[in-house]
Image (cartoon, helix red, strand yellow):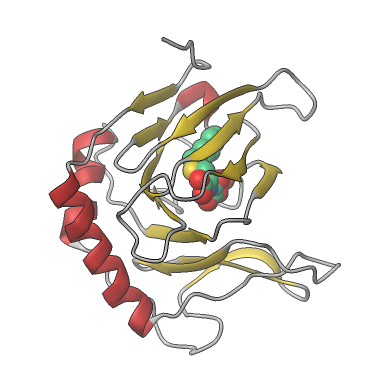
Length: 204
Ligand code: MD3
Ligand code: FE
């Protein structure tokens, strides 16, 4: 059993296989309306290896000109983001211990070679609510550190169906995804990993 930094709670196997399949079906419907896009880094314009979409009232986007931000519309189609499925709202209410509603579900898609460098999630204007993360598909190696860059880090695997709660002292910790382990799940027919992060963005 691994000791996680304060405020991080891992619930291995939180979602049963049938629930994972139901959520995956809902995410596929969302992506049909709001296709995965590849965000680019502020200033450099360098593309991320992760492709993204969102549902809920706000979605996270990034590009060379505008930088990291939440906005009401998809950056390519300009349509409003699809509604957040009730199944995800229910999970937020079960795990978040926050009376507020989630405003955004960021959908990250990793192919076999995608990764995400160490970063902080600080584009929200409200940090009192936790972030709830759900993993679907191939296993990844996840890494979390402290609020300052360069501190000690802890690594652990996230598997399909796992839930992670990021609250309190860990809410502003540096974190990233070092690698995807190919062919470790049969949930996604073409492999890869989907991570969903449920978020409160504005002050309730
Ligand atoms: C720890 N996603 O979307 S989820 C992100 O697996 C992001 O796709 C990763 O980092 C992924 O911003 C990690 C778990 C996670 C999410 C937010 C955190 C861990 C966190 C915020 C603070 C500390
Ligand atoms: Fe993050």
